[in-house]
Image (tube, rainbow, N blue to C red):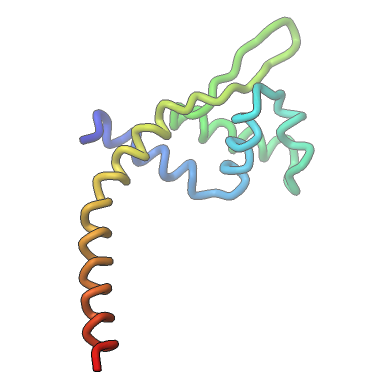
Length: 110
């Protein structure tokens, strides 16, 4: 189902922290510097750099360099892989909800 289980582990670990999710949300709107990413967060710029390292390790962020500007960019491909993995559980949840609906229908019957 997923090509690289280790990468999937890294993506979910990266998504586990709210600051990293906030960084990804910001980068979904376009590239940004570490300074720009740190501005709205209640953490230091070095902490944001550490979060970016985790996101880079998961393949979710790339950092470039144009002169002195080092833009961070979102790479959403690993998110697609994670979504595909989660979608694999859709049938399980659908059948669970169907069973719950049937149980509720029984308890509502006179």
